[in-house]
Every structure is written in structure tokens, then in C-alpha cells.
Image (tube, rainbow, N blue to C red; front, side, top):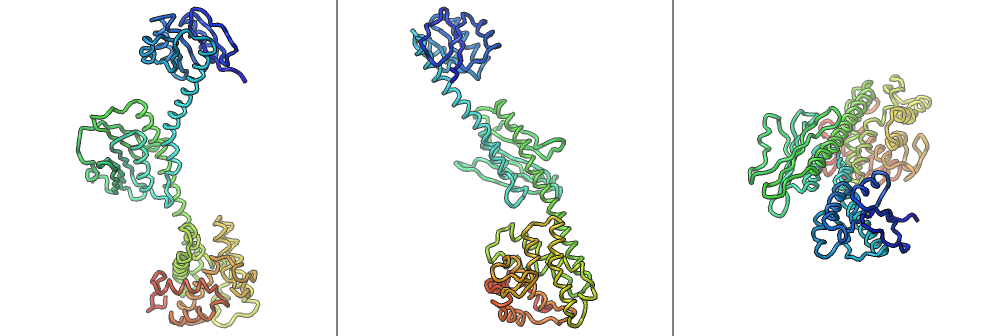
Length: 459
């Protein structure tokens, strides 16, 4: 293993004794600086005891010029305090043999590297916290609350505030965190720009203020500000640079939230458009998809679905019949019984719906649930004749709420029935056509009002 390298200032070279440090002895400060320009070093050593004031000056110059390298001073007890003040990171009393000096150099290098790593981690810590800045619900409010607390902690501020313009409503959002005794109080306002004074921090001691733009690229989204009372140590250049960095990195999740919302809105517009297209051919279908989706979400919530799964279930409910776009109205609006051939055509709507949603980029679960929402618990459904828990749970939910919605809303080929009669039919088919657990969850959701039905219209 290659030994550590050290440039050492000393009038006379010490005898080498097989130490793990490779010393390069130089007689003057200028010679040391010349060596450092052409060679790599891990540490510096100065024989202050032999060089006196010149050695102390060498410690000072080298410590300032090369802060990444620890300086070890060989000094008398009387010189040691001044050597430390000048920047020495290791001390050794003379006489210093090669091995003893090598051990002190190694110790100083280890300590200095550990200190530098801790400083680097301290700087990186707030940046690492920014990785989780976007909350699960994707709200800008959550980003602001987290960002303002990261800024306060990272800069040791008494208060911090962030102001940004809401891209949706063109309102200002203001988040603050401030010291309140031994704890910190958090506030959040959303207000019109001309009422920003309503969000001012309460006046207390005179404060030192440091502000950075919340900006990235050519977009400025707001401002990030930290406060300290003047009785404390003022902010320094490192604080300013760190706040500027937080301003740049803190803007990114706000842009991400805005982008996610725009994508969600575009997706919702697509879902609404497809659902509307499915309902155009029959007046009794108006609102069918929306009602069915609401019922499905109520059941999914009772069965412990996550928020993400509930959103997918809602989309599947809205688009469960999208495949009927490809089926003739002559069949869909036929008032009498369908022929076997016509029924086979209708049955294809589940596969066509899955194909449409897959091609449009919807998630795998949405596609699977739409594909299998006409399977039966007893295995007599379509398109694949799945049985029991072979059927995806989302599809089992859609099967129950679809049947209920069709019964209570009615169709051109069958009149609507009262809610109580529809519930009784679900119970009759419990364990035959429908998953018993899903039926029970839906009935409880109806009773509790989680799945609301307009009793007068049967919807």
C-alpha cells in the first residue's frame, strides 16, 4: 500500500526508520509551496521548535493556503498555543523522530478527514432531506411546510418563511416557522397578493434577514427567507450559499407538483371524455359511470385500498364500459332480448375496453379490472370464466356496483327497481354471482352513507 505523503519544513532531515509516511524534507516555506504545486501531499509538518517565528508564520501561511491538508507542528509547550491559533491540527514536542512524527501525521490526517466528512455531511443533510420534499398527496402546501423547516434547521435560524405564487389560482401561499419558547410554531396562509401584509411575522427583536430566490432556470417562483435576532452570531457566506442552493433545489419539487397536477388534469379530462362518449347513445346512462365510480371507491375504502389504488379504482369505474364504443347502437339499444350472436358481440366490450385503455397508457390494474368486471364468483362469467379469488378484487367490486347501478337506474330494456329491491338481489347472488365480502362492504357503505343514493330518482 502506498504510504501517506507529507511535506515537512525542518532545517535538517530526520533519520528515516521505516515509517508509513513518505516525508519530503524542504528547508523553507517557499520551497514547501513549490513542492505543493508539483506534488500531491496528504499533510504538512513544520518544525516550529527549530525555526521559531519563521516556523509559526509557515504554519499560518500553509493552513490558510491549504485548508484541505492538516498541519502538524513540532513545538515547545510555550509555542503550542500560538501554533494552534495559527492553524496547526497536530502537535508534537521535540525531539521528533521519524516514527513519532509519522504517527502524529497519521493521527492528524485521520482526524482531519473525519472532520471534513462530518462537515460535508452537515452540508449535504438538508439537500438529502429535499429528496422527500414532495408529499404523498402532491400538494404545494406540503412542499412549502417542509422546505421552510429544512431552511430553518439547516441555517440555525430563529424564523424562516417561504412565499410562492400558486400556479392554479394565482394566489400567494406563505409558509412560516418560528421559535415559540422551547418549540417552533408553524403557519400557512393562502391569500391574494394585495393582502400579503396579513401574513407578516410578528415584530420582536431587531433581526438579521437573509433571502434567496426560489427559482430555477428562467422561472422565479417565490422567495425563501431566514431570520436571526441580532443578539446571535450573524449569518455568514456559507449560510448565504446554502440558502441560495436551497432556493434552487426547493423550486424543483414545486415545479414537479405543478407538472403532476397538469398531467392529472389532462388524464382526468381524458377519462371524462371517454366516459361521456360511452354514455352518449342512451339517455338512461347519463351519470352512470360517475355514480358507479363513487360506489366503487366507497367499497374499496372499506376494504382497505390505498389512496393510489382508490384513484385507480375510480378510473376503472369511470371507464369500465369504454369498450362499448365499438359496439353498434342497434345492439346496445335493442329493447328486447338479444340473440346469442348479439350477446357474444356485447361480451366483447370487456376485451375491447382493456385494449383501448392499454393502448392509451392506463395502469395495469385499471386494464385488468375493466377486462374482468363481468366475471362471476361461481366461474360462469366472461371473458375468461375466472372463479372466486382468481378474479382481481377491483373487478369483483366493479361487478357488484355495476349490477346495483344498472338495477336502480334502469335501462332501455328494463325498468329501474327500488334500492331495497336491488340490495336484496345482491344478497341473493352473494356467493354465486358476486364476492360475498364485496356485497357486504357495499351494503354497509350504503347504510352508512359512504355510498350515497338519491332514493327519489333511484340513483
